[in-house]
Image (cartoon, rainbow, N blue to C red; front, side, top):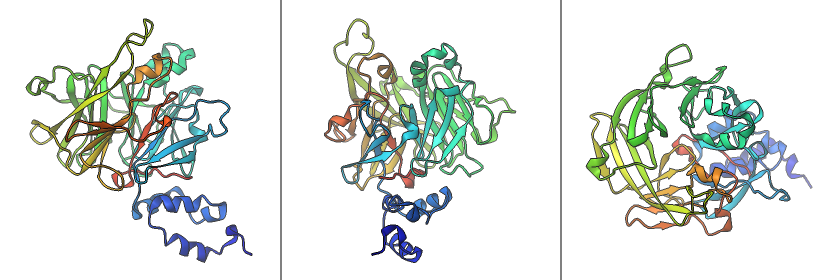
Length: 397
């Protein structure tokens, strides 16, 4: 009897041609090395991904914090489309902080302040410049476990690293920086005042947008700047909070919304009793509500919206993104994870439990799934973006 691994390439191609979803194609490749040989390069994977539909987005849980666990190098994925859990092997990300954008994981390591992009299926690693430019790392190199969590957001200008316009932009503490492949160092982007909340790349306008304290919005021509030029943000506008009854913005996000708008989302948390005297700033908390506002990039006008229509928005330690409802994604909802990063540093039990789905229609909140695994202690939970939303992330069970 012929072994599965010895099937002729013609038969394997016939089987692969019957697969309807990209994740099924990925599982096909993971059967054995001979089946995987049908795809020889990451470019082949990306090409298939843009042809086949996807069941993304998914929620990637933190790794286990039990040293005896035999699957420490695995991550659990919760599939919204089916309500099922799957596991993927990601030893490259074990015990390392990471954030997600456009299907890649940005991983930083203690060794020489390294940074790299990881493609979770092919295990392709793209090494980025060392992080010495981010001055938060210089306070005490022995306290890496503390300072590494200052990495807040990452945005990519393209899902394809081969794209000449490919840039990596990150927020680390109060510093904003970017690089392109081949750079020997990160380039600092100056001109922002206050704390950095979020960043997004507008694919139509080809501009980076940055939001800081009190809803100040900056614009940056990311594609026409490099290390040889001064990189300075251009002040675009400031959110008129008083006009909408918002006197402060404790937490907010921005993302591209159509051809000519940005969507700003504010997040309000409620804090319960203080944890104890030592950790009195970061007691137990949960998300209370969200509000949504549109900024027209044509005339600079702001407006409040109460519905996301048939779209859903995903927020957390990932680049903020929206996707059409369907295949387990509910319309007019905000899917959120816990990105209140101070508790990851200061609470004895860590952070991560504030995960849920907010319904815009009535303000109700439901859990993403019913499981003890919804509590994350070691590292943040991450939304993995869909293929149709410029993602190249793929998974292998």
